[in-house]
Length: 201
Image (cartoon, rainbow, N blue to C red; front, top):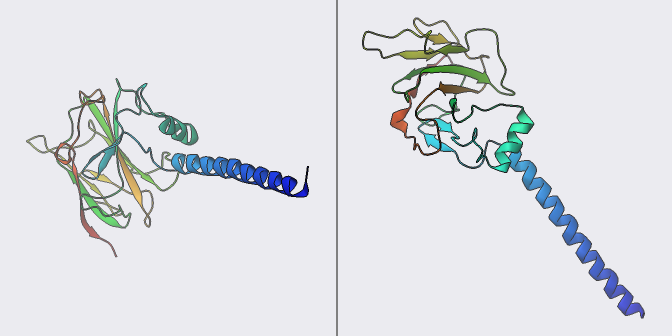
């Protein structure tokens, strides 16, 4: 084999190796990027609330399955209910633990619901007033309710963010609801509004 042929073969081998390694690195990075964020497919937006109706079904996509494996979360099965997440208020502003919010309005029909507040990081129980239920909440004579999220004590239904400074999210879980399943299309009118009433600073 001549010197030119040898160099040409080595050059082609280097190109193939570069392409294989580059493709593998790009594939691994894209997979890592996908599982480090929220579920990428199948989500529905209803005002500030987002829900993934298929996450508890057999039709869950591989990326969502990998995200659940990474976080250790166990989603509600399709027959159990739905979990709605909100990281912004109804005006699209990030939820700030230094501000006061009112949650009021409609909610999909459910036998029972819970509403919980979580700070940044893994979701875990935090001592204090970070959760309530449809059985514990007080209502007016028409059956309507409103709930206040504030770092300082408020009258009526009141929840406190897990920290004074920083972002937080709200999770509303509906149990035994006819809205559970993959065919319902959710809209802003079907969920309670999250209204910023003011901030402490």
